[in-house]
Image (tube, rainbow, N blue to C red; front, top):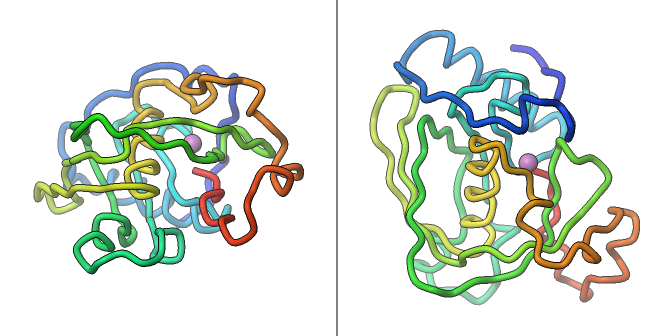
Length: 190
Ligand code: NI
């Protein structure tokens, strides 16, 4: 495994659609994913998409740990809000309902910044794991946000392009001016 260099905003690989993976079980995809996971964890990110490491293929890795989820949820709701470390090859997202939610996002390809992005609150996503099995889940809140953020990378979209109010593109070092005490759980870079 290896820690890979992360492409930064402005690199052409981040601005173009990534290609579907022909065989999710191919050994080179497993190697790519192992390196992506190591790179993501080394950078303390919540997610990473293959184009961010210079590979223009439709592969993402992400996690939505319980600590990032809202408190006071039922078990069923809690599952929607959290996800273990997950690999998705050729992911597809369906938006469920009209609810939208704003949240602060960061991105390992846009280091040092945070932006307020509104996205659909509730989604269903599916894709393939490294054994070629189809995975389908529903997701809400931070879990839904991180999946949408990562899948946007596969279409050449970085979160600033999703922002409605660019005055809420700020330096990470200033985010304490914007956060309520105790709600600083949404900021891991993706
Ligand atoms: Ni990102």
